[in-house]
Image (cartoon, rainbow, N blue to C red; front, side, top):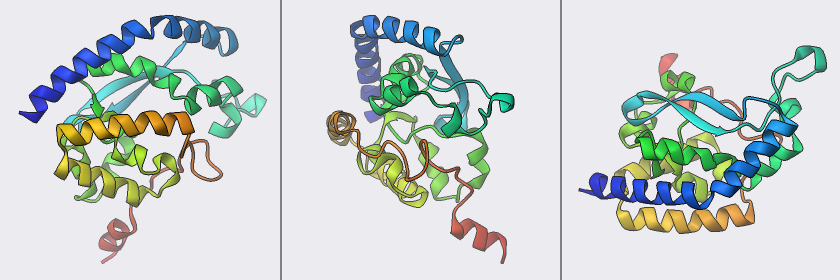
Length: 207
């Protein structure tokens, strides 16, 4: 029942947000095209419900890889405009399209990289038992400033305890988190360091 009701809420809110933010979407698309060139959108494969892969869409925030110009790392490639878009979460506005399509939900564990799938412990992999979210419990409890293990523990706790009331609370707290610009990046990182697997998984593999 919660899945059906949440899906209706997802569609209504996502469509409404796309309509209300249309002028912002057009303005940002123009800025990105001017400052970074085309394509305006960043598309990347991400694992969704039950690990099924979909293409997530966001506004582009980085320059293309160009070793000749020293544009190799994320820190080298991100621009001032990109930092602003990420800090305000405006880069994520196109992701409402993914919500309308059913790839994502308003609330759920954030969709990460496909290559992380075989690095999760069985417990961490439970984060894929629900649709990934535009925001989630980990995003309002530290975002990128907390460790991977803590982030995944929060994701799994959400899967086990999710309710419509909890989703509403997370969405309200997300507004405050964005306004305060909390936890935008881990120390010394553009966002988070790459997840290489948890210690417990490595220890089990070495037994």
